[in-house]
Length: 153
Image 1: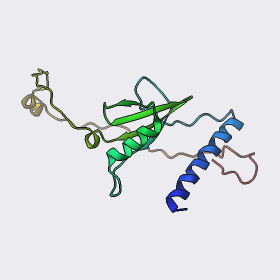
Image 2 (image 1 turned 90 degrees about the vertical axis):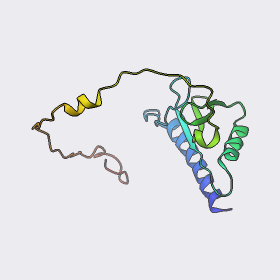
Image 3 (image 1 turned 180 degrees about the horizontal axis):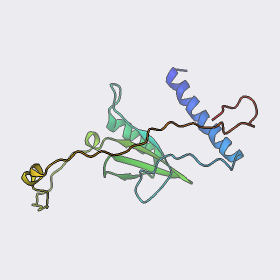
Image 4 (image 1 turned 30 degrees about the vertical axis):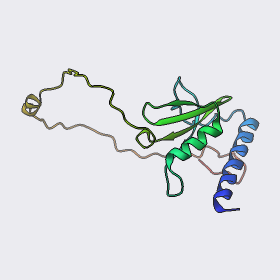
């Protein structure tokens, strides 16, 4: 078994352990996994794909898409494919400009209202003195009565 295989198996084992832990401790809130998928908020576990010397990015993305089967996709900011698994989503992201071709389908003129640069340059600057707080954070141990071996937070 290679180091990559060991790392992959340790990650998968960790996910199983976290799922078991959350099932056993309903008072512990669910982790925030992200929510960058189309169609509203969905807890999302993200895979960020990057190309390397062995396999290009399109090949990696195609492998993930084949494995996901009925994946959905988005090309708004990044290229994203995702699949829903019960209450969460597994999503793979790749830089859009590295897997898609930018095609200009036409041009149009757009008129916008912007501040006049000459007028902005003429606006005087003023010096303002304000009071700011210098603070430190002193946190009491939250787990004073916790069993030995737990970290005091």
